[in-house]
Length: 454
Length: 41
Image (cartoon, rainbow over all chains, first blue to last red; front, side, top):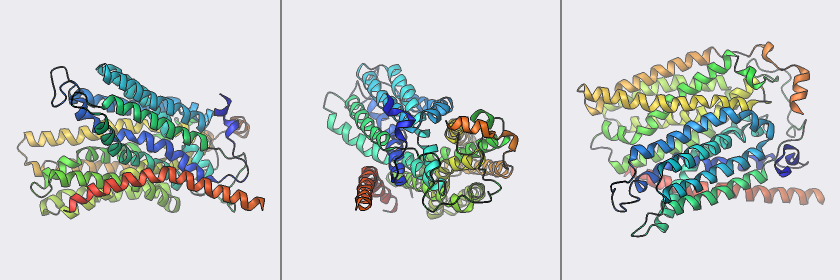
C-alpha cells in the first residue's frame, strides 16, 4: 500500500496549499455526522412496531449509549493512535478513518437489520468511534505545517467542518429514511448503508488530495520571525515528554473547562429556553434556537481560531473565560427580566466560544510544543473533551433536577447551574494564566530532531 | 506559457476542491437557517 506512504504524498513544486483545507474538510464534514446521530433515535425505537414502539423495540436509554460510546472511543483512539497518525502521515490516517467510519455504518446496518443492539454498539460506537478519533486528528499537523503564518485559521477551517457536518447529515438522513421507509419497514439500515458509501467516497477524495510540504518548504514571501515570541517556540517537544510538562495539563484543564461550560447547555438548550420563557419560546422556536446555536458553534470555530493568529492563543482563551463568565452570570438576569433577546445573544456568544475553544487549541499546542508531534499531542489532549462530555451534561441535568425537587420554579431552576458554569470559567481563567513557555530541558536536541524528521 | 497553464490548472483544482466541500456545506447551512428563522416568527 505504498500510495498511502508519506513519501508518496510530498507536494510537487507549484502545489497550492489552499487544497489542504478542502482535503481536511472532506474528512471533518463526514465525521461531524456524529452530532446528528440523534435523528435516528426515534425511528430506531419503532423498528418492530413501525408506527409506535412495540415490546422488544429498543428504548431511548439503550440508544443513547451508541453516541456516548462513539465519543468515548473518539477520545481514547485519538490519544492512543496520535503517534501512529503523526508517523504514517495524513493519507494513511484519512484512509484508515474512512474505512472505520464507513465500516461502522455497514456493521450498524447489519445490527439494525438483525435487531441486535450490541452489534450497533460495536459498529457505530467502537469501529465508527475509531474513525472519529483518527479522522479528527488526521489533518491537524499537516495544516499547521502548510500554514506556519496562519495556523489558527487553518486548523479552525478544518475543525469548523466537524461542527458543520451535522448540517448536512441531519437533512440528508431524514430524506434517505423517507425514501427507504415503507408501511411495513423503517429504512434505517438502508440509510446507514448509503451514508457509509457516501462518506467513504467523500473521505477518500480528501485522502487523494492531501499532500505534505517538502522538507524546508515555506509559503512564498513568508519570513519566520527573527525573534520568537515568549509563548511561541521554534523548538519541538517529543510527544511523551509533553505529558511531563505542567503546560500540557494546564491546557488540558483549559479545554476541559471551556468545553464543560458549553456542552452542557448545548444539549439542554431546547428544554432550557422553553422552561425559562414558558409560553414565549415554543417547541418550534426552540428548535430554531438550537439550529442557530449550531451555526454559531460552527462559525465560532473559524472566527476565534483566526482571531487567535493576531491576538495570541493565551489572550484568546482569556477572552473566552472572562467574557464567558460575564455572559453566564447574565443569563439568570435575562430570565428575571423576561428578555428573550438578551438570553439568545448570551448563549450564541457562549456557544461560539465553545466551538472556538476546540479550534484554537491545536495552534496553542503548536505554540507551546512545536510542530513535530503536535498531532499526537493534540490526540492526547482530546481526552479532555471526553471528560467534559460527562461533566457538562451531568452538572446541568443534576443541578436542575435537584432544584426542581426542592421546590424551585422551573423558570429559575437553571440559575444555580449558570453560576456554577461561571465559576468553572473563572477556574479556567486561572489555569490559562499559569501557562508559561515550556522549559528548554523538555525540548528535543538537534540530533533527536533530525532523527525524528527522517 | 507553461507557468500560465500550471496556474490555470491549479485554479481549476481549487475551484473543484472547494466546490466539492462548499456546496454540500452551504446547502446544510441554508436548511438550518430556514429552520432557525422560526425562532423569530
